[in-house]
Image (cartoon, rainbow, N blue to C red):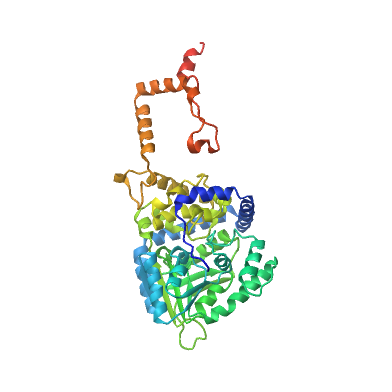
Length: 475
């Protein structure tokens, strides 16, 4: 990459959102993509009763796993260690990157081939490796495209969903030597694969994420369609998986309903092309597989969510992206406007734990609270309830704050306004006087009323109060 890109501070969220909604081409592209994904999901769930039953099962599995998370993590480490997998614990993004760098230096690695991993985006893995003199390159086609463009993913499942085929054609012609401009989608995929194929064999380390971790068997489960994940975890001599601590499940049988929910909710597929289960490094006599397998378990704020009974539900997420695909806000502004690793409704409720509420609280207000995300969430996360909670936390007084960054949205002006509101509505005489003054002075109401009048008519008190109208009413 020619430039180092970091996630944006959310102070710019309004400006980025405004720029996005004023781009008719982007809005058209996202609207078409979201409609397409919604239709594909709808086809995969023709029986509403079957869907609700499966969602109940998926939610119960995730809630059970989280209720027993500490003991399951211990069991996972014990089982994996017995299988020959080396388990590492990282409290922060910097610690996770430091562990990966230590492994790479110990095996004299110079290149790392990456399968798709949102946690690696979360910790800005590529930039940390570059700073350490190690080349880390993307092999997922969508990730490869945004890497070439010097951008971040705009969707957790389809990183380059914001790109048109014309934009990708121009990008490949500019960035890949010897490639001519073509808008043929099959040819573009072929060009990308040819550019990447040799790199798998040359890579010293393969890096992946993990969709599920099974404590019972010590297994890493990877869901994918392109085969790059399988190549990254079998061809290089060392495999590193990095994922959040919340991904652990109790039993292997618990994977099946979640897998069914994940694929059908995410891309509208009954099943993905590849489903990889990794339980150990290469054994004597086996023809492929890495000599070493490492698992880095990342906290990075997840413990904060886990400690709160309501916010713990954010950790149920299986990263399907269905909430984004059905969100009217995401469909209009796209993923980059959010400025976080995880955009959309799920990003608004998980990012505060990773980055602090002070940096992310505007995202909690970037929602209509229509509930579309709740209706389609395969594991029944109460997203709107949590958004309301985060809005309240953003306005919390210091003595009631319970999250890192709580109270960041609180202002002296707003506090004074609500103090006045409380005074008026808690004392009858003050309320009557205030309502009388407002009704008589309604013509003096300002035309500009902040954010309210961006898209609404200015508020103006009625010339007569209800009590006045009732008095004037003839018997």
